[in-house]
Length: 136
Image 1 (tube, rainbow, N blue to C red):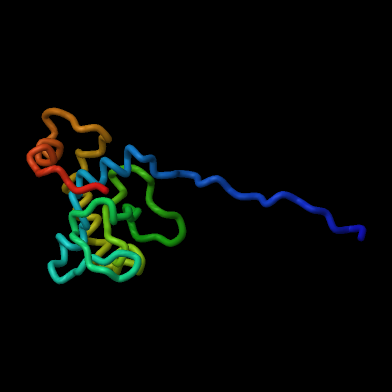
Image 2: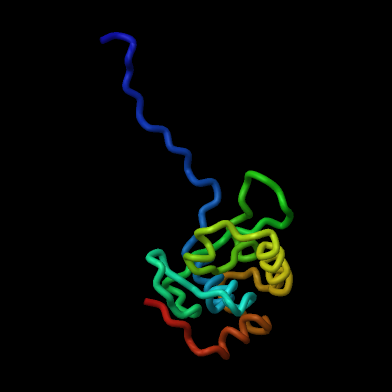
């Protein structure tokens, strides 16, 4: 058998991974599924279709939101471009109207792009006043 050569699988490294610190900061900032807050009729579900509390941070994932509508590349992996969503909201592609709501929400919390809680930041002070979220 000549001509066949074994080559290792080439995997591209993820160019911009979400760090655990950024994930935690976005979950604390949002305090739960953002779609449940923006659309009151939304019911949060896990991967198996079971209902769960929108504030259960252990069952949420992050959605990358781009600054402008464009094809291809996802938004950056920083707090200014991430929102917390439940599995049901993140599994299907969010509609154009929902993405517009996400962009408007991110514009309101634009100053809150730091990962650790800061004194003097209105969003951080609001997070401190909230009861601690459930994390499994």
